[in-house]
Length: 182
Image (cartoon, rainbow, N blue to C red; front, top):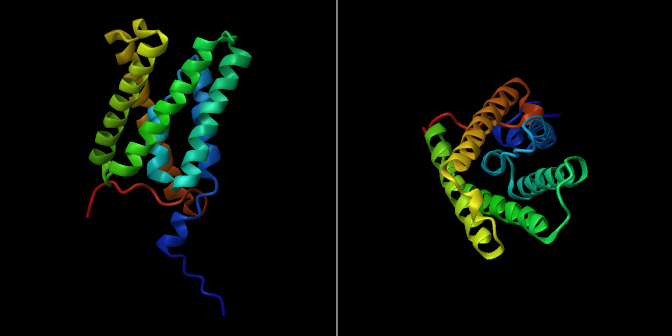
């Protein structure tokens, strides 16, 4: 006799559709936004909605797609500084992901704090790399605010998308992030 009861644990590990949907939305939206990839939002949402292995695969796939679009379609120069910047973005994204995995807490406030912490760490690591390889002129208040706003909008959009999809189709998108702690 088969048990047809689906447990919460079953739903948490049945999110096969979320990683490709998530990656496609982030990469597609990045193209529309002039290749302004929301690296921190992607890292934070992946850390909260995917297990470690699939989270890492998803964020690195998003980064790789961004690099392919940048170098292949948008004509980024293929030189050491630009390639180095690409790797710096990936490294900074991985730092934000690790922080979100380690310090992420349930509830909207917990994820907002985690996202802000990830953004600060992301910017600091990029700034440190820019000191080594050049490009500190890109760290003006105006540019950081523009990137921060982009990250915030993407964070909210991806969080809402995951919540709606997980509630509508939990067998494909897993469980929604808890809205608050119990």
